[in-house]
Image (cartoon, rainbow, N blue to C red; front, side, top):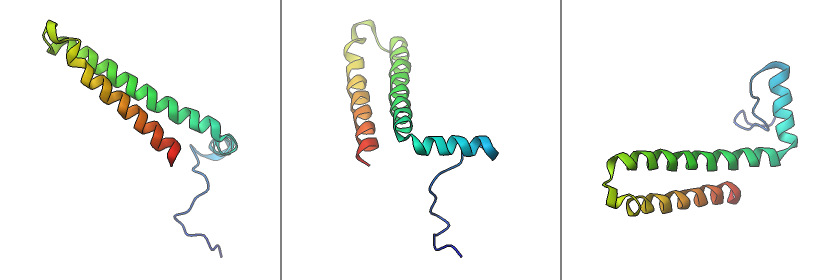
Length: 91
């Protein structure tokens, strides 16, 4: 009988059978790749959010407010990106 609780897992298998197990094993042996994927996902998501918000603001804001109206969002997204990366590497 195992002493481990059923809530504790060393790896999560992506997919199934041999391919999923080999991917899980490879990722467990290369943690820097997993960290790089996480960083890329955070930065890509935030860049896409800024692009979408910029495009939307071009249609909503008056022409004289285009630059100043977007600065608050820019600073907020830089802050979110910084905090996301801080939490990723701090945890």
